[in-house]
Amino acid sequence: MTDFRKSVIYQIYPKSFYDSNGDGWGDLKGVTEKLDYIQKLGVDYIWMTPFYVSPQNDNGYDVEDYYRIDPRYGTMDDFEELSREAQKRGIKLMLDMVFNHTSSRHQWFQKALEGDLKYKNFYIFKKGQEKGVPPTNWESKFGGSAWEYVESFDEYYLHLFDVTQPDLNWENEEVRKEIQKIVRFWMEKGVKGFRFDVVNLISKGEYLDDHEGDGRRFYTDGPNIHKYLKELNETTFGTDAEIITVGEMSSTSLESCYRYAGEDEHELSMVFSFHHLKVDFMGNEKWVMVPFDFKKLKKILFDWQTHMAQHRAWNAVFWCNHDQPRVVSRFGNVEKYWKKSAKMLAAVIHCLRGTPYIYQGEELGMTNADFTDISQYKDVESLNHYQILQDKGLSEDNAKRIVQIHSRDNSRTPMQWNSGGNGGFTQGSPWIGCNKNCSWINAESQVEDEDSIFTFYKKLIELRKQYDIIAMGDFEPKAQEHPAVFAYKRYYEGKQLYVINNFYGNEVCWDAGEELEGYVCLLGNYDRQEIKDREVTLKPYETMILYKE
Ligand code: TEU
Image 1: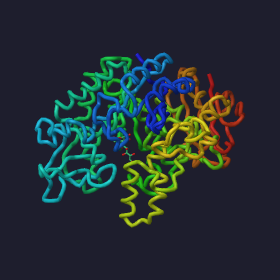
Image 2: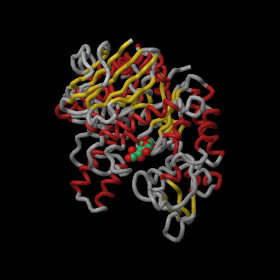
Image 3: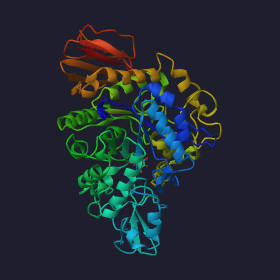
Image 4: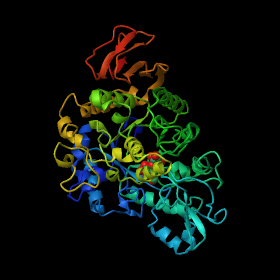
C-alpha cells in the first residue's frame, strides 16, 4: 500500500510547464523532458491538470472527450512514454478527473441538445420559474446566472461554472456508470493517483431560490455525496491499494471532510479545502482588495489540523495551485524578503499534518504575473469579473487592480526555466505572457545553489523521508494569539518537532512558555544552531524547524 502520508506531490499545469515543439503551448513531451528536474526535487507523484480533448474555455476543465489526449498536448504514445519515464525515476502519475461537468462540446451534451432523451437526462434541465426567470437564482462561480436558456426546449440547463460547462446529473445511474468506465480506463493505463475536481458539488439538493446567498448551500456537500463517493471508490480505485486520491472540496465543512477523507470511510485518501485561502476575501467575495487576515489564517489552519486529526481524517496541505495567486506575492514579501519569506511559507506548510502539494514554480519562489494590461489576461473567470466589477460601478483602473491581485492567471504564467527569452519555456510565442522576473527567478540559477528556495524545498522533502514525526506526528498549535508568529509542535513516539515562524518583515519577540534548549535546528532560513532560552527573537520572516529526541 502506498503511504500517502509520507508522499509529496508536485502539480503540473502542462499548458505552462514546458513546450517541446515551439508552438507556445506546454505539452506532454515537455513534461517528460523535465522529469530529471522533478526527480531532483524528490517528489513522489506528479498531479497533471487535464490534458484531454477540450475547447479550452476553462483550460481543459471543460472536457470534450475523457478518453483522448488533446493533440496540442500530444498523443497517447507521449502519455505512455511519460508514464514509463516517470516510473523509471520512482515517480507516479496522478490525473485530474473532472466529473461535475463536461464541455458543452462533449457528444453527450450535443446529443442532449438534439433532443435525445437518454442524454438529456445526463444533464440538469429545468423549466424556468416564469418567462425569462431561471429555475433558481443561483450564480455561476465564474459570474452571472448558473442557468442557460435553451429555446428549443423552453428549458434551462445548470452550469455552476462557465456556460460551456454543463453540470452532469449524478442522480442518473447511467452517468455514474460512464464515469466509472473512464476511471477504469486510466487505471488500466497504470495511473496511480486521481484528483477529483470540485467533487463535493456533484450531488445537488433541492432546486430553490437562495435568499441568503448564491445557491452554494443547496449543492455543496449535497445529500447523496457520500453514497456517490463510496460507490466510485468501490467500483474503481478502491480495488487497487496503491492508488491515492484527493478530492477538491469547494466551500466545504470540516464535518463533511471527516467522512470524505476519514481513515475507515472508503471514500478518498485526502481533501483540498480552501478556507485558509479566503483570508484576503470579504466573506465569500473574492473580487475585493483587502489585506490578508493573519489571525484568521492561523485559526483556520489550526482548526483543520486539530479536528481532522481527532477524526482520523487526512488533509492535503498547500498554498498554491493553478487557481490561486502565488503565495510569496500573497503572504510573503517579494520586494524585500523574497527568498526568506518563500522559505518560511514552505516550512509552515510542509511540517503540518497532511500531504504537501507543490505547484510548479512555487519551489523557485515564482511570483504573481506582472501584467499591466487587461488584454494580457486569458482566464475566463478573471475576464468575466473584470466586466462585472465595472458593471457594479468600479473604474477600469480599480477593476484591473483587483484582477491583478486575485486572477488565476497569476499562477498560470510560464514556468521559468532560465533567464532567456520566455524564461526558456518555449522557442515560439507563449500562449500567455512570461513574467519578466525570469531574469532572476529561474530554475537554472537555483538547482545547484545550496541557499536557493529550490534547495530549501528539496531539504523539506528529505526531512519528511528521514523523520517520521513529520508525516505521522500529533499536532499541537502554539502562539495562537500572537499577531506575527506562526508556531506549532508535533509529537511522535517520544520525539518532538517545533516549527517556529515569523510571518512578517520586522523582528518579533516570542515567549514559548517552555525551554527551547535541547532542540537541534534541522532547517531554517537564517544561520541558527540552537536556542538557549524560552524567549526567542525572530528575524524578519524567520523560520526554524527544531527537533528533540
Ligand atoms: O476549481 C474549482 C473552483 O472552485 C475554483 O475555480 C474557484 O471557482 C475559483 O478559484 C473561485 O474564485 C476547479 C478547477 O481547479 C478550476 O481550474 C476549474 O476552473 C473549476 O474547477 C471548474 O472545473
